[in-house]
Image 1 (cartoon, rainbow, N blue to C red):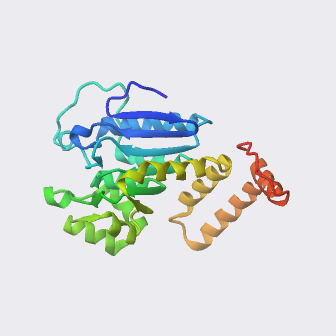
Image 2 (tube, rainbow, N blue to C red):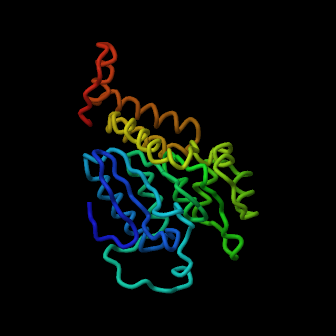
Amino acid sequence: MSSNYQSIRVERDEGIVTVVLNRPEKRNPIGPQSLGELVHALGEAKEDAGARVIIITGAGKAFSAGGDLSMLAGKSQGEDSVPPASLVKALTIMHELGKPIIAMVNGHALAGGLGLMVACDLVIASEEATFGTTEIKVGLWPMMITAEITRNIGRKRTLELMLTGKRIDAAEAERIGLINQSVPADSLAATTHTLAEQLASLSPSTLSRGLQSFYATQDMEYEAALGTLEAGLAELLSTADAREGLMAFLQKRKPEWQGR
């Protein structure tokens, strides 16, 4: 993994790659530079067969407070070692990655930071974290993350957050389906890594095909989705990992995944 990033830090532990948003003094804002580095890191993880699961988290006391307003106002941060990227590019590669992404939310997840969190496949959050689309309070609207949030919590909940700009706590976020689970702050890392290890122990080929089918069909009409999923199932059943999984089940043993 590259180490010349300015806004993120990438760590590797066996098959788990952790991407840390790493500007804690600014509450880990997201902008062209940090998004470019995130896209680059995810691209490397996609090509790395040993990378099985990705965790995204924030340094310090925040996950991400949202967009870098200095960049939105037209201020430059200087030369970047990695080409900049848009939020559209980042969200797109997250859904095309074919590897599970877990958000480990250690603190505030606001505005664009909330969108980045919701785009992850699973979310584990500290009970101390807060969530909100606060853009309306500075005369902006959370345009790009609308597509992510409405697909997770529905129209009415999304509009309530966006129109009021209010913050909600982790218990409420879990209740409305914005996150999967809230845990005590001192259990966050252990809980997230346990989940990551569980996912890393599964067939990477099946996970990839499953995630790609999930995102490919989420906006299809019902019958079209069924047809696509039926074709996906036929392809899945022809893989070595599917055959190994079924054989291991019948033989009452642990499967040995080949990744194909």
